[in-house]
Image (cartoon, rainbow, N blue to C red):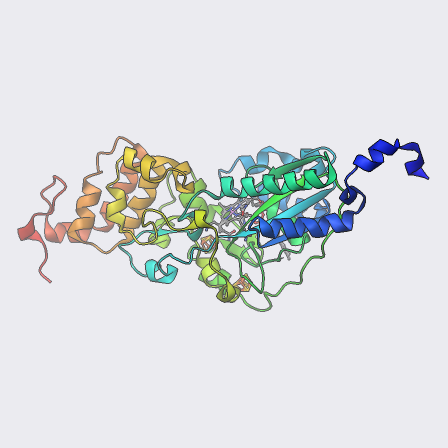
Length: 387
Ligand code: B12
Ligand code: SF4
Ligand code: SF4
């Protein structure tokens, strides 16, 4: 009856999938796979349970200096308040584990080497994911005509994990990340907010059981209770998001982790089933999986900018990079090379770097006193301890 009022020409011009939302949802999953996503799910926009937990987390100050987490209020937990008209969220999962990287546990066990989180060894994921999501949205437009949408990945006030959990892309682990039985947790999430009332996909059941491996392994005790993370203690926060001095009590616990941290994921039994990414952009660049701390600490600002072009690491800037490396060097075994590298930056123009270098040198004080330093950044050969 309703179509009787629509001019015949318009009916003929309306693409068929616009009238068949279940078929469109199936097509979206298929197109998503063709674009390289491992999985696509669809959720409604009711995040009321998560909203209260987000507010509690913010009230407790667990976001530390991440002001952007508090800035947008409930727009983060109410998709339609962020993009008017949103009724569904299409969630997408893209695996990033680089199969060509040196084994993570091996690097963590080498205190002279820098450990960089697996997600940051290749190119910045923001652009990669965004381009794929945009391509998916355009295929949808080709199929249904104009519709309301916006794509996001880690770039806006969006509760990505909560939405992906609703959309059935995995369950939230006790470390707070999303994971699956088939592929573990080494993946990024991205979304398309849309005004199309697509059918939703069911949520998955939780398979953490009695396991507490991620909580037990966390070097800084940042997972303060199952599903609750205090970012202020998390090494990922401290080395990436935190702008100032790293609290001294936490520095020794950071070990050689100079950008991000993966321990909670490395310890998770479900990550035994993870598959290496097929995404060429996430392949290791510049040997970042296997480089000594002193080599990275010697980079000039220009080398930092040049070598980390297109890498997510560049976003923390040279000063935080040196700060983090100084902590790593403070935790490394004492040696002439380590002390010389630190002494070479003892007068760094940045107060932040100088303070962390001084702390690191303090950690090698006994060695320096025993060995004797020329005071000009070189431990004299004759004063080095004999082994
Ligand atoms: C802020 C942030 C961080 C912060 C804080 C992390 C956090 N857990 O909140 C810091 C800098 C520490 C961080 C670190 C990392 N992050 Co981060 N981060 C984000 C960001 C921008 C927002 C997360 C957020 O909303 N936090 C707010 C708090 C309130 O949420 P929450 O801790 O997850 O708590 C929820 C539940 O745990 C729950 N809860 C509380 N109590 C209880 C009790 C029960 C019983 C239950 C069921 C639930 C529950 O309530 C909360 C609301 O749902 C998202 C992107 C996005 N826009 O969503 C990426 C994101 C979560 N990060 C990501 C990644 C990859 C990482 C790192 C692995 C990077 C690294 N290697 O260093 C680490 C992992 C650390 C960890 N264990 O979480 C990915 C995760 C992908 C995945 N598989 O889940 C995301 C989704 C980015 C992306 N687009 O892919 N991150
Ligand atoms: S990323 Fe590292 S510091 Fe943060 S919760 Fe996981 S194990 Fe702990
Ligand atoms: S380590 Fe254990 S508790 Fe933590 S997310 Fe994995 S299965 Fe869940």
